[in-house]
Image: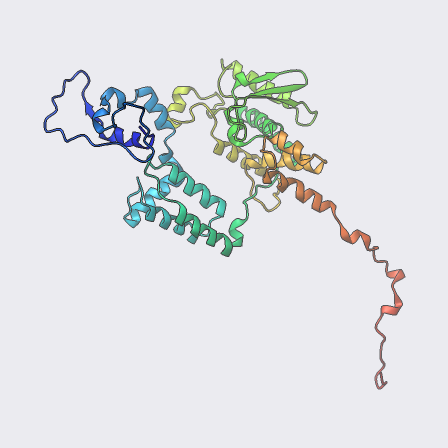
Length: 397
């Protein structure tokens, strides 16, 4: 029997209760399940619907544990999907499973808002992924619209870049956080030092657990199960200590604080109550059903903005976000002659990543100065022959 016929066979299978003998009454005549790819061995009968299995509830019902895990990762709960459902309700479309028409019209709506091309692609991908298996909308029409939108809206291709938080920014933020003398300042100082040296994405920073760290005299070793680029590839990443960042001292101080509250396993960076005590699992369960004890990435974003302002720092015109820690490390490295390959390895980017060139190219371009070939103008040595002659009144040219 062909593979293509297997799905149809499942649909035609009969559902019965476990342990129940079912008397088939007025059963329809079996249908052949064959197509041009069906292969029969000598003497094998043609497959029909009568050959299909009889499924029980046991075959179809998930366990409570598996169902809970799937619900926690429900693609229908993403922000873009929630916005899509709201839009469908307003336009009288069915959201799940949506039609190709609704899917295409929503893409046109996003384009009418002049969103970035990368944002639209991300939203539409998440929406399509949220649809039930076998009922995903055709994306070909939406992609045709996007191609036209890309041609006619060049500004929509621009990436939203964070202000790079180089050491000249990070160190004042760390010092200001520590000067507060509060536990949250100790945590945030360690978080900024780690975020800069680890060169990671915000989600990677807050997913690190105490068991993943090994603190040595001159470095911090971080075990990383996987990252965006290296799926299923564990890595051990050494973070050498520096006299300015002092990642060993600052991370040790924070971990000692947690140990003083009996916390020696679990998330490194976690929520604190107003009195500075780490929030318990019971407390977090009331408001953070998905992240639990782990600090949420958007909280890192808020803390970066807060201490940036408290330190009296002025951005370069780009937004201040937690991604600036990663961008700042890349910028510092690029400015100090790190190669594109070295940046790819340190930041765990894919080989040839265009993101790396965003940091390397500006530095190289800044070093280029074609006008350095032109001597600096000296008024005392001006070329008199180029001066325009002054004509007196009444004189002829």
